[in-house]
Image (tube, rainbow, N blue to C red; front, side, top):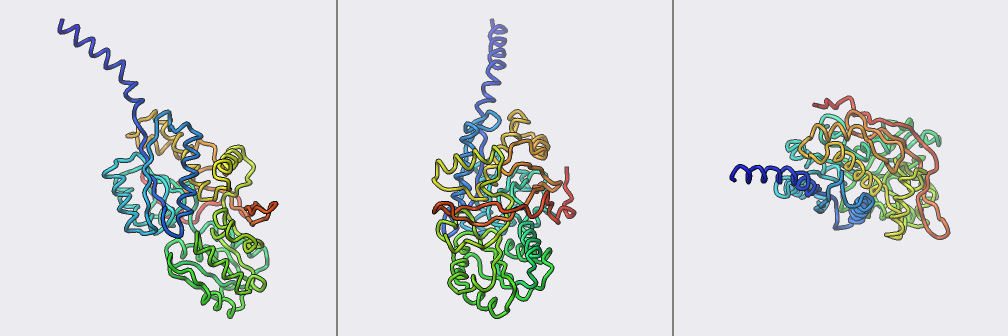
Length: 390
C-alpha cells in the first residue's frame, strides 16, 4: 500500500511539473525618470513598454509578466540604489530602461557583478560599448556619439565651415559634443558645457555663440531643458541669423510646446515615426489611438525591448537561469523591430541607420518626419575596446 501511494504521488508530481513551471512569472525591473522636468521621457518609455506588453498578451515566452517601475530622479546615487533593490530584494529576472548615461555608469557594476540580464533602452555611455561591455547587457538604442556624428556628416554636406557647440556637463553631453567633433570637418570656434539638469537659462551661452560668429550652432538638450533652449534660441533672434543643428532636442515630446519654433531645425535619429515597416506602423498607430500623440524615439527603443525579451525567454523555454542561452538568443536579434532591419554588433550595441529628421506642420499638428538617410549600418567606434567574455 505504501509503495502504491508513493508511486501515485510521483506520477502526480510529474504530471503537475509542467503546470507549475508555467505558473512562473517573468519579473522585470524598469528604471527610468518619472518625476521632475524630464518625467515626460520616462512616461513615454513606460507607455511604449506597456503597449508592447499588450501586443504580446502581457506574456514573454508564454509566461506572465510582472513589472516593477522605479524612479531614478535623474540622480546616479538614486539610480544605483534602485538597481540594487531590484536585484537584491525584488530578485528581478531582467532590468530594462535607464535614460541617463551617468545613472547607467553608476549602476553597471551591480548589474554586471550579479549577471542580471539587462536591456538598456536609452543611455548610450561609451564605456558600455567599450571597456565595460558585458555578455548580459544589451542596448536597443545606440552609443552616445553615433547620432551627433551623423549630424557632423550632415553639416559637412551643407557646407558648414565653423560651428559653436553647446551641451550639458555630464557623460552624455560630453559624448555628444565629441561626436560632432569626430566627423565635422570645419572649425570648432567655441564649446560650452552647462549645469545639468538644473540649468534652464542659456542666454549667456547663446550670447557667446553669437559673438563667435559661427556658420552654425550644435546643441544637445533632451527633455524640458531642450524646450527652454530652443525657445531662447528663437527669442534671441539667432534663429534667423545662425542655423541650429541638434541631437535629441526636438522630438514628439517637445513639439506640442515648441510648435513653429521647431520648424527648420534639423536633427538626426535612428528612428522616426514614419519609417515604413509593418511593426512600426502598428506601434505608432496603436500608440496614437491610446495616447492621442506620436511616441518618441525613447518610446520606440523601449518598445523594441519587449519582442527582444520575448525571443530570449522563448529560446530558453522559460528557464531564466540559463544566462548563456539567453545571451546567445539575444545576440541573434530574432524579432521585428520598429526600425526595420536590426542587428547587434559584437559589443551588443545595434548596427543601424541614422536619419535626417525635421519637424513639420501637418494640418495643425506638429510631427517629426524622415527627410533622408545620413548613414547606413553604422557601428559605434568603441567596439574595438570591448573584450567580451563568453
